Amino acid sequence: MIRFMRDSCLRRLGGLFSLAAVLLAAGGIVSGAYAQELRAKTAPTVVFMTDFGVMDDSVALCKGVMYSIAPELRIVDLTHQVTPYSILDGARFLYGATPYFPAGTVFVAVIDPGVGSTRRAVVVKSKRGQYFVLPDNGLMTLVQDRDGIEAAREITNRDWMIGSALSSTFHGRDIFSPVAAHVARGEDWTKAGSPLSVNTLVRLNLAASRLEDQGLKGEVMATDGPYGNLVTNIRGEDFLKLGYGHGQSVHVTLGKREMNIPFVQTFSDVPLKKPLLYIDSRGHVGLAVNQASFAAIYEVTPPMRIFISRAGK
Image 1 (cartoon, helix red, strand yellow):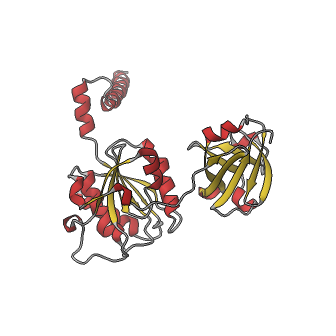
Image 2 (image 1 turned 90 degrees about the horizontal axis):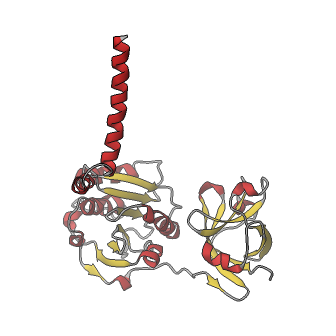
């Protein structure tokens, strides 16, 4: 009986200590100064994205380089399954992820079909206070349009690279990974190299969606992972200006195909294998088929023009 009571008390104390630890980590029951000290000890974060895939050792080699320079790093894999060579996919993944990470986060993006060419390797600081270590090939376009860019540097500091003879085909390992580690561990990021005018950064040639008298013009930019949902550049708030409400049929022109598709909140609002139009988790208009691939069924290959008529037109 005594042993049972002792074990029960220990379990309760353990639960209390665990709760206290969580509250301490959140700064919930400690002084402001101590909360700041706890946050200061948090491991610096690198968010890592590539089109390398996971079939070989490329991702691991890059992480090894970063950990060798800054063992305390916390590396978050955004994705390594970006469509090969698709700078647009990389740009939209950065756009989608950055709002969920704090200032000071370092994003390393290696979608680099021009590796070894005259394209520049850069470090960019956004006005949100986040850092981006990547090739200057348009990957910053969508983040730049939303968050703005504070400053940029071309990576020229050989002391921040690895290897006496840099590979001409693996800058992810030899340039972007070590530079990201130096920046993440708190070194002066301007030491990466010479300053660049923000206006000289390469941009993707993306046509913005346009609201007209007859409706909204936009573009299908991509498909959503393995599901075949269509991702557009039309913001949900602009779509709602057309006068549609949930349950109404929306007249959509995709390329040369015209369709009437119900506007709903979620996939299960329509029967299985039926199409739907919805506002996706990133706040843009999406097209899907409930438990099937819109892209496959309707033979859509991005990029493709899309036009949504005003309600009643």
